[in-house]
Image 1: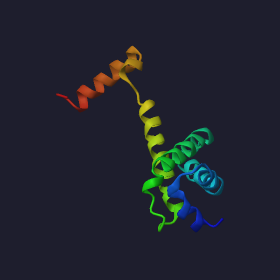
Image 2 (image 1 turned 180 degrees about the horizontal axis):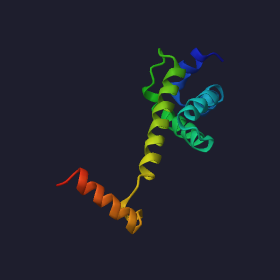
Image 3 (image 1 turned 90 degrees about the vertical axis):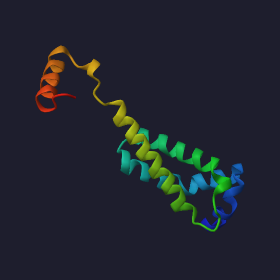
Length: 116
């Protein structure tokens, strides 16, 4: 089945077309996610969320468009969101600092940003 045929069938979101779309584009979607995240496990999670989101939006997909770029855009956005979530989760919390680190941080804050 051609990419064009998949694009035409995709809005129906039946199990067969979803399987065919995953088989055709899953590897490329994984590559997009891996190139952004650099972690195979997180990239695999993004592949899953990409296809779940695509399936949920299948009825809104315009079959006159190409399916691959649409999927890659979803994957890129999912990967960027995952990257940002991970970065926020690892942000330093003052509660995690030991007393010495907290004292130094407070000193620097008072010295270079007084009144904050």
